[in-house]
Amino acid sequence: MFDGLLNQLVQGVLQGGLYAMFAVGLSLSVGVMRLVNIAHGDFIVLGSFTLYSICTALGISPFLAMLIILPPAFGLGYLLQTLLFQRIVGKDILPVILVTFGLSIIIQNGLLMGYGPNPRDLNAGALETASLNLGGGVAVGVFPLLTFVSAVALIFALDRFLYRSRTGAKIRAVSDDVEAARLIGLSSRKIYATAMGLVMVTIAISACFMGVRTNFNPASGPSQLLIAFEAVVMGGLGSLWGTLWGGILIGLAQAIGARIALPWEVLSGHLLFLAVLALRPQGLMPKE
Amino acid sequence: MTADDALLRIDGLRVFHGKFEALPGVDMQVGAGEVVSIIGANGAGKSSLLKAIVGQVDRIEGEIAFGGSSLAGRATPAIVAGGIALVPEGRRLFPSLSVEENLSMGAEVGRKGEIGLDEVFGMFPILRERRRQRARELSGGQQQMIAVGRALMANPRLLLCDEISLGLAPTIVNDIYRILPQVRDRGIGIVVVEQDIGRSLKVADRFYCMLEGKFSLTGRPEETDRATVMKHYFGL
Image (tube, rainbow over all chains, first blue to last red; front, side):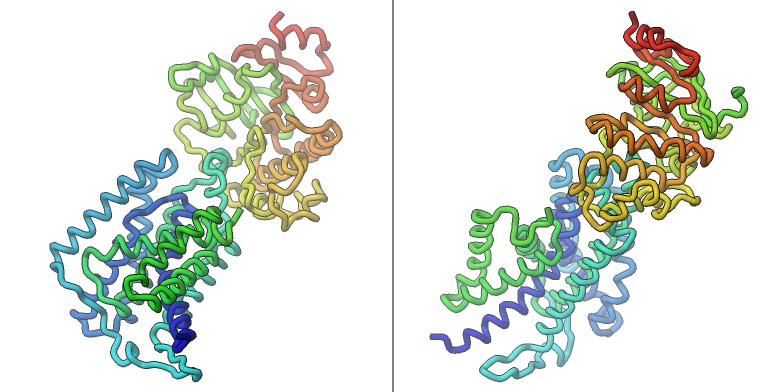
């Protein structure tokens, strides 16, 4: 009964890399900026559709299209924080949830109007089907491996930025005590706008990898959001490396669940999340 | 000192928190290289005065001029960048940041100048040893040193200290107060707000005694006897 178990676990870990990639932006906004963004998954789907349009129009690779949209994605995040989120963040959790929930509905229905309900995907050519045989019955897809490595690199880069750079220190300072920051003249506006810009950059990168990996339709966002939230909470709020572990664990749980029976695949991830929440509510690698 | 060469000049300042008038009208001056103490009982309006200077109150009337130009309508970041730094009541450090990162936040918001990490570590050597530790892991006195150091890193021309002795052991308070004359000798004006009259008068070149939002007595410590100060402190 252990035939192919190792192989499935490896696939689970790699799938977890994609989940961690979805989740790292949410980890930054929820864990550090205290902004619960219900529209996080919908922004990823919006990114995938945007890439789809660019790829179709210009006939270029989704990875090239992703590089093109990174600067505008940063700009979108910067403006979104400055014009919208800055007005509602900090006072109470409810306005943030209502506003981002509203954004979620607007994005889903906007995409439905623009693209219709049919699923799409991004075409990365031969890369999608290439695989490496590692021996011992384990074969990994090149693209899932690339996704995992990219997720780790992204988390490494964000972690360095947050804990080694001056801007990162300012983000953490405002996150620690926004009132104290105001008293000493440290304005949270530009700092949080920069952070949200970075969140959108992670979203654009996730949008590319998700679009190549799976089909997406205008209603795909909430299920991405759910898994991203689970990865963030399991890993521990504010810990970017914890988010990676959260994603990997969900991927592993799904791989094991899929061995039992296919309906168990998605369910197992959620059950693991509930178990962690019950036994270790602060997460696996809590920051404090 | 005449009103013209004052670093900070306040005329008829009234401070409002919503409809509540926290400060019904004060006049004061602080010169460069001068330590001015504001003493008064709890709730006399001392903190409201300091917060008004850095633009952290709902509404003011009257005039606050710094270096000859009005601070009216200026936001806190602009005021701090212009050379006024506050050591807030209760320290208000960033607990998860390291000692060094907390100090560097002062440099981020302030002016360019001669005071950097080395100068602050020179004043408070213990902070150099603890520079990599998180602020929350340090003792209360050491945290207060960080708070003072953070304000100094902004290279202020005017330093505002709000209750920096609160809740600390007397020997530690001495360590912190000892650096105020050094700071003054750099030509920085200092406003010290305290409930502790003795401590406050000892360090001051001039003092204002505040009672119910008004200055009831002002003068030089060496020219004023203790009994007179106590009378105005308590409003007897």
